[in-house]
Image (cartoon, rainbow, N blue to C red):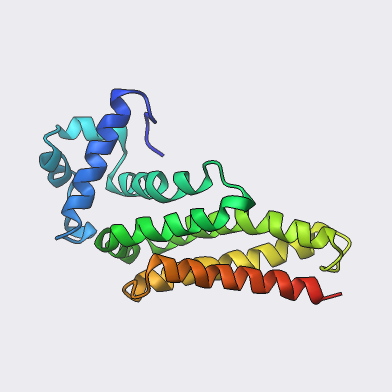
Length: 192
């Protein structure tokens, strides 16, 4: 994460750098961009960049965290999960070129973030299903494995959607994700 997170003008400067990166990535690949390109785009000095970030990769990670991860996990509850999933798909879709370019160089990091988000959502769901006696096992290992299995699946769906050009709308993707999750609930609910 950046060196100075959300401290008044520091956060505003980080935002300026993020906007410049996103605008540049509309036309250039991330690999071709330099810190000088980013700072020139937003009218800041290179030293200012390095005050906030170690390198352009850290800036990219910060953008993904601030735009996708943080809004998703903020106030996340099971009763607003589908709204959060829709917002995630919508954010990615609205910045299509940026996220497609980001994925080309940062697939592992983006996948790790998305998998963690999915896991944090799925784990309580699996726990509640387990409490109903639908998942066998005396320890938490079955619960953990089921949550990991589903979270990697959700992450894979999002990554494939991005790599495939985001042909389906955020609404369709959210409905499909909802069907899969509801189907999983039903599946585990009948397994005794």
